[in-house]
Image (cartoon, rainbow, N blue to C red; front, side):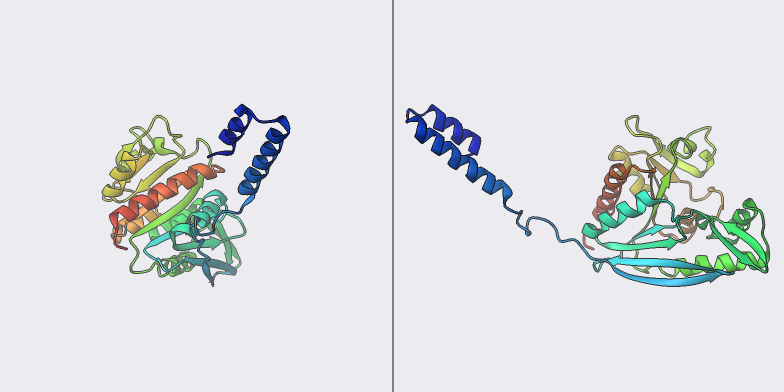
Length: 288
């Protein structure tokens, strides 16, 4: 019987006022005591504490730290944060992994998106999500002003170091990205959009913000997340332009890839989408 019902009954009973008051006080104290009791620790899932290791890779004069955090024993789902300024996705991923388990790989770059270094007294800059092919490396270095063969080699070695961190047992590489309102969205992949040629299929949900979307190389993942009413892009793995991005690399290597992309600062949305993605992937591998 709840405290509210008990109090109502106490007032309806034909008993002296003093007794009613004593009964009321007793019931209120009992209800406060119950509410104040701590939750049974067995009711909440155990939070996994990550085992973290750090490698340092030198590019020219720059030492870049790559942090790997393993949550539990699972390493079939690999989460990767290539841009160190995309805080929403990184912090949300850590929270989700504490309950689901998995491996998180992230580049530390002084909270900067792009990586700059000096080589032979010259400065170079590149986007770490454009370093997974030599063509992509050349283009991203040129975009930021300077490129030569030695710089391409330095960046290529760094990319290979990252890829070697992927376990051979990985079922999916999950990229974590934030974006800026209106600058990059699912609309880029619709007919007439600047990336339309890179998409095989596109699902756009009217109730979802276009800035919040998934991009995947896998048709089964595409259909499952589309059924959950999210914005989803299925990359055209044959005709997608070679820009050095991780999604193109994974397609070539037959690695399942999923990018979870939300507008910067929308932690609740990122949490929801990431949990939906993990649920989808777990359904595909129920015995793992």
